[in-house]
Each structure stands twice: as C-alpha cells, then as structure tokens.
Length: 203
Image (cartoon, rainbow, N blue to C red; front, side):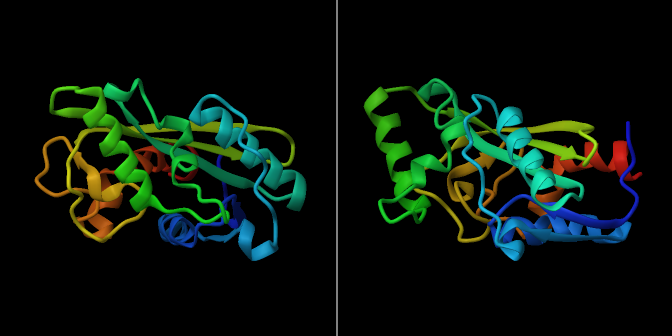
C-alpha cells in the first residue's frame, strides 16, 4: 500500500463541512488539504452505480485537473425497507430545481416512502463511505467504511449535515444529528474509512 507523505492534497468536494472534517483528520500528518471549490473546479458527473465507482470518478478528475494527489469520498444512506435507496442517489434526493440541496425535504420523502411501504419498524439502515486516494501516475488506494443503524422519525438534532438527524447508529441513544462532531467522527462511516486510510497510507 502506498504512503502519502505530506504536501498538498486535493479533496474533491464543494462541501465546506466535509472539507473541514477531512482537513482536521489529515492535519496531524502534515498534509495541507484544499477543495474543488478553492480551485474553481467543477465536480464531474457521478455516473457510477456504487459508492466506490463514484469516488473513483471524482478522484481521478481532480488528479487530471491539478496534477496532485486527490482524495474523494462518496457516501450515502441505504435503507433496507426501500431496497437500499437512496444509496448512491442520496444527494440527488435532496436536489432542488435551482441546483441547491434541501435535505429536510429529502428526509420527509424518506419518511413518506417508508410509511407508504408499510414496512415494520425498526427501519434498518446503514451509512456507507467509500474513499479513493489517487496519484498522478494512476495509482489508487480504495477504502470503505460502514455504520449500521436505523431510521428515526421525527429527526433529532441540528448538528452534522445531510441525513444525520434521522440516523440512529446501533448501540447509541443519540442520532448523528445530536452528536458532538468529534464523537461522530470517531464512529462514523467516514471515520471508519479514514481509519483504514490512516493505517494504510499515513500510519
């Protein structure tokens, strides 16, 4: 497994909150992270059918644009009673006509579809995060983390982002939306994928 030894890293995202989380995890290793937004880079169409495929598309697009190592993640919420939806389309479910994202509307849609499905509770779900770290020579490392849990309604908490308020991880009484950011980072799907990256490429 290839090491990433300090220097600059592009994080292929326009999400400032995601960049801040990732940058904080990388800072102890002397890695300075910037985002697509910092460089005015568009995000390529996510045409993959898996989280890993979409992360790979974004990572290699970043490498092609700037010529530096690029880290991309693709993550989402999969709900068993909805056949795994929204899954890789988690962000799309929040997409609005003006291009903005409204996750409150997406959470209402999830609840409505669960009610319509008449699926019994608990509504089992899991968050997945796929990470792809790509280098200019085409080499890549791939990691994937998961957190099982269930959907709660109404949502609880105003921390985190996305679907965090309706996701209760197994073994906890707080939703991701209620957790302190650092507590969530330790156990989240992204945190688990990053632990693999740290062990393989930074440790």
